[in-house]
Image (cartoon, rainbow, N blue to C red; front, side):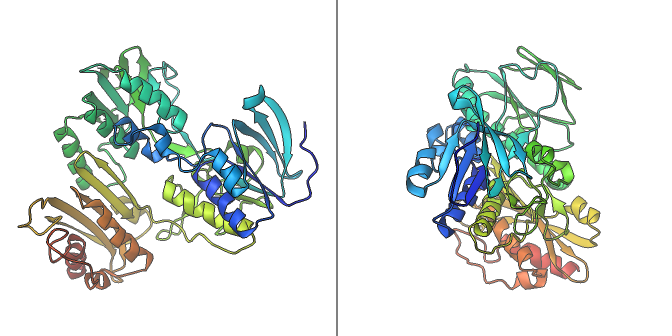
Length: 453
């Protein structure tokens, strides 16, 4: 069935989370007369999937705390028709229509016309086709539905339970921390030679040491090959498991766009220009379903982060609402933690720098998070890369305890501003013994790197 006639310009948004609702909200601010319909196949809008590990670990009290704005708030305060349990099943870019399945009312379908379309379908978790993977004991970490299911099972685990986390990336570490805090015997398996493969091997080895020191049973070079009740089969033997969490990363959820003939690139990520326009007329896209421009390498890359999704969505919404905005790109800044260890990175690592054709130098320094004599001073390690001859900052990785990770933002700012390491050395950063040595660790690294060029 088709929706009735309309007189106003209509924006249809597919996806009710960060990239979708940030675009809808920004378009509404700029164009009060725009009709906006947002389709979300789940029950929630604008929620933080990044907070799921902290909900499971007990740092966040309730699932509702992860919801920034519920559907009713969008309807009543922003005049956005947020339709939950409404799934877009196809797009016709020539007819400018979306076919929608209404799961709230028996699965009926209807056709929804648009003047402007914004695709914000997010990411699809990597879920290999392995025997037993569809068992109820195998849990993903992607949506609030996943969170509710995982939390229910976690709360019913007994003392000495065994949890296996499959994947050693950001989610893998965060879920490992959650179950360590719950007192579970926690095992992490990762097919790579180290956890957090986006860090250089020397830094990754330190992360592995820290994980084992926290009681995590870490198996590197190990892949899951199948599952059965109470067991995880791997290429290196079988592990006992009362609960299994998949943290194997994500890929673009771009099937709707692909089927509609919209241009895609690496990993089928939707290709967008700097205003977030796709190859189809009047169709925008943002967030984990599309690619982004890397400011250092100049390539289209896939970066699935909430910070990027929100900025992309706001850019799209500005253009949809009649303004002008461009998204300047990403440099891959990210942080995570495992218990006391904070891990941060920005720019390119050594492998990425070589692949992009850079000639570079790198240094690694050790310092403390506070003045060495001040109570609570803890070790911090900073690795920094700079381009030869030009001295331009290319990237950094930081490992340390409380107060370490957010120092990466200084380096991210320097990369964005095209600073050289010599210019970084002269930055007028704050100092007091409770917060930093008189030479901040980031400045020590930049000074040492400048001296090596």
